[in-house]
Length: 77
View 1 (tube, helix red, strand yellow):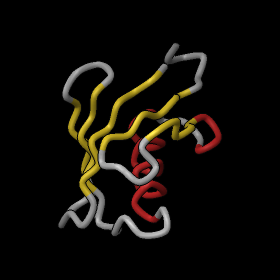
View 2 (spheres, helix red, strand yellow):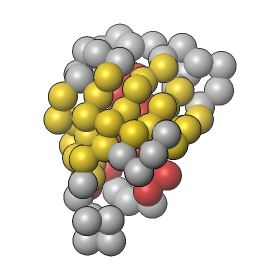
View 3 (cartoon, helix red, strand yellow):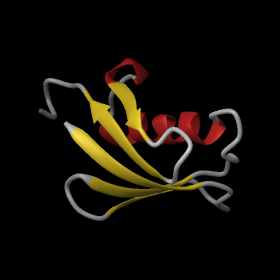
View 4 (spheres, one colour):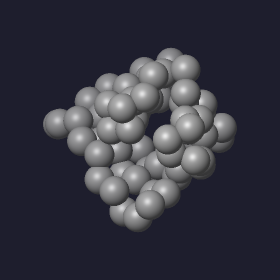
């Protein structure tokens, strides 16, 4: 399953807002430096979907606020 994420780094609190089934807005405290925000977003996604880090892959948007992730899990596909 592919999901589309709008990243909000430097947020006061870490949170995830579901826009629809495949679109999310994720706020993280980390800055977008050296992948810190990407790692924090992945951590938020693992908690939200209750999956391991190995099941999430950042497909595009490494240095953009608009990101596409692939989530591999038999329970979600």
